Image 1 (tube, rainbow, N blue to C red):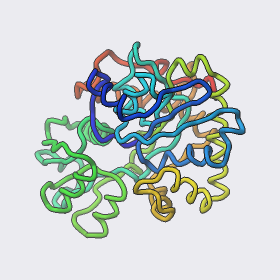
Image 2: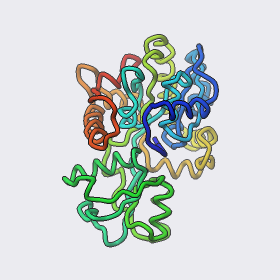
Image 3: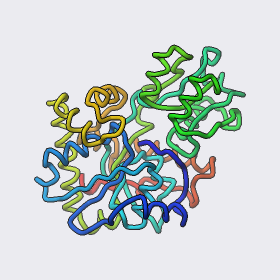
Length: 326
């Protein structure tokens, strides 16, 4: 879910990605890149419980610091797929770089949010304020969505570009009056009693959603492997529901980073909603009857186009969603 920098799939990013991601996508293995985020835990659960192997597919999971780099590496053939938010796909999808969402992983349900001083009590109060956030990331997408709902243009605020963690630190230090960040920073603001959480993603269900997207060539050439990945993934989600504590131990160890402690992982889980197979089918829909994801795609087209983050024209549902393996 978390992207720490924005950028296109140009030569510089692609070049960096080639050195940032080891190896290459190989036959018999589906390689998936991702940033560190609690919502990607079920992928590790499926791997470490042997569910992928049960389906006859070898899945290689690789942490990449920035989703832009992961998607660039995928375009260069170093990865078969990426776990990423829907809005991120639109910035990098093109005829030359074809990849589509095949499964839904999780939805931010309080894990992302906006912190503000006591003088800011509504979205309308943001006019004229300086807001710290990571430009070009899902944070800016979500923030722009909130402004759009209130009929406010992004030009009504001054954006201070920094990572979500730095934005939270700047807010706590009193250097900015508003910041867009995520957990555990939201809890830290509450604990330190400096300002408040103005709004979090639980108020915008279905907007910040992580999916597993795969290269179109992988979807076309390896349909049975793709079906196996999806079957194993949702088997893991079912296991997680029945065995939450054991699942947290496995997922925390797999995802690692700031989530390597099972308690921290369990705390982070409170801010997401994991999708099972039924929820995924409902959210994605079909080509004949697209689900709620179609509204997010439309929204992302509008926001990223307005912000100049899309190099081509509008991208529709059929270009970035493939439900054949479901």
